[in-house]
Amino acid sequence: MLSSAILFSLLAPALASSLDAKWLSKRISSGCATDGAASCSNSTTDGTCCYEAPGGLILQTQFWDTDVSGSPSDSWTIHGLWPDNCDGTYQENCDSSRDYKNIGDLLSAQGASDTLDYMNQYWLNDDGSSEELWEHEWATHGTCYSTLDPSCLPSGSPTGAEAVAFFETTVKLFKTLTTYDWLSQANITPDDSQTYELSDIIDALKQGSGGYTPAVGCSSGALNSISWYFNLKGSIIDGDFVAIDATDDSTCSSSGIKYPPKNS
Image (cartoon, rainbow, N blue to C red):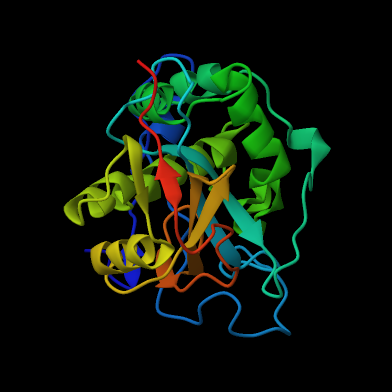
């Protein structure tokens, strides 16, 4: 069950010879309290290291892709973690100087190999390499988080540490949002001929998540995306994600929704 506040404590990366030992001995910590106001609760507050703004409406969006090689048949996959503005608009590509390349190498060098291994299974591109998707998600969305500004990191942090924190947090949050399992528990499973009602899909996801309504996306009458919505207390690095109902409508029809199996 998904509680209304999900606390993440991101630990320091494992030792890696390419990094300074003093840095690696630290815990990755924002130093921010998590008992203050959630993002989007104060429209007059500017973004800081401990208050996410203007992108305080956070979406964890998942794919259901049927034609991606190696995609797990019993799980949705990660699309991204997006900081929408509280009014539903959004910013993109906020700092081109931090458009890091070779995300996999960056994660490995900073001791986040476990996160990288998971991404290689569950964060896959439906049109190109996964590396291209990771680079796109960081440059387009990750650079727009106020709480991931390099000035918010501990002194001595290596270049790209904020991107590593972004990917680690996204993976940790995704692991709590077991969309496939919640649908399966309501007998909503991939099938070549079966179709489903939107109300049944939403009811199943509300039941699994503890009462929260996601935005359900369809393409050509078939399920293809789920977006879970949050506000944030503290920093993306180690803050509390406060689950909320989707502020956008689902794009599926009310009935006849297909949920095709993934191709082997």
